[in-house]
Each structure stands twice: as C-alpha cells, then as structure tokens.
Image (cartoon, rainbow, N blue to C red; front, top):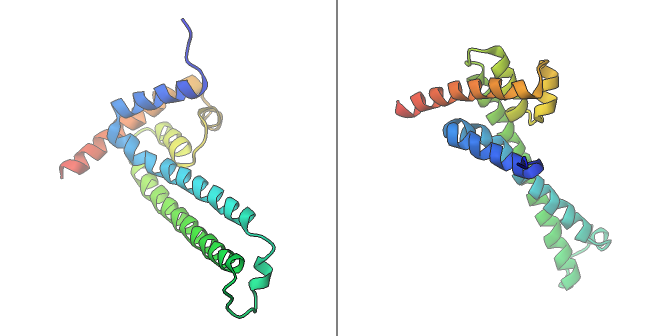
Length: 162
C-alpha cells in the first residue's frame, strides 16, 4: 500500500484535524488564512511595482496631464499605496490574533502541548522544526497536538454555549 506523501499527506492531515476539532482548527486557522492573504497581496504588490514603468519619475512635480500613460502610472501608484496599507492592516490583525490565541492556549494544562500549538499554529513552524525546538520526535508531536487541540476544542465549545 502506498502511503500519501507531500501535499496529499498534508491535505489528509488537515481533514483529520478539522473533523476531530473543528472549532479549534477554525480558531487557529485564522492566522494561516491571513498569512496566505498577505502572500497574495505581496505578490500583487510586486506585480504592480514591476508594471510601474520609468515614467513614474515624470509624475513628480508635473502638473496634471491627460496623457493615458501618465494616468496609468498615477493609478498604479495609488493601487500600490492601497495594497501596502492593506498588507500593514492584515499584519496588525495577525499580531492581535496571535496575542488572543496565545492567551487561550496558555490555559491548556500541559505546557508541552501549549508549546507545540504555539510553535506550529501561531509561529507557523513546520512539525519538524517544532519537534526540534520542543525536544521530542516529530511523531510525538501528534500526541501533544491532539491533546492540546482536544482541550482547546472543549474550551471553545464552553465559550460558544455561554
């Protein structure tokens, strides 16, 4: 029997987590989703910067012109500034969420499970890096992750009932 590897293995793992701890995964997933959005916005920003031609330097100190090229450059400059603002705002939200999530995770009984959840879900470390920092094997990370997620799921369920 072939074991799934790479991306397929990650997809199966994600399904397993969402099926067993839906509230905890949704809660912890906010940061990852926002990081993905930031990556997309940064790619758009890079694309806009590449498209911006050398004509941008002509904009400085020039009176308003009806030239289509200059208008495109002005529009592109505004789009770049707006993207930068959106990226900065998203980064601010990530910091707020990291703080909130960190506070909740700190209430988990087992300090190793706390550390595993923080490293992997908040600091976005791989399981291998997390295992290395915690000092356990990568296989052991599942046990600590599962215990932490189970406790987090219970806490979130109680919060939703109130």
